[in-house]
Image (cartoon, helix red, strand yellow):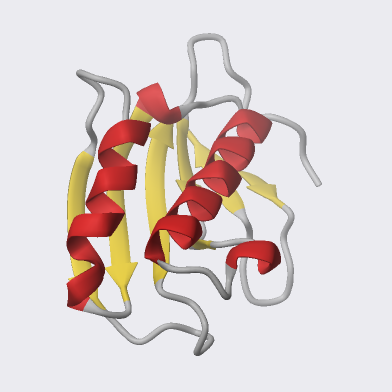
Length: 126
């Protein structure tokens, strides 16, 4: 069964199928959007942690990640936050590219695919 979380006309925040969660792009929260790449990456990953927990997964269950940077010059600073966030031995397959952002103040966005934790049900439905 396909479970869709927080579905709107254009997208769902997450879709879970066969024990795999496909998450929509996550960006920094409003409080961090005027910050530098470090602040935005920390905020974005905190929001990702919350969404993963909501659907019954966590950062140890990441399968893949695609990171979009507004500026290539932010790569090293973003990686410093990323490297501290990813649990040792649990790095997902990852791609990082530069791309336009949906809002001028945004510097980073991430899209991930994650397995549910053992016994996970995909969290609550909206």
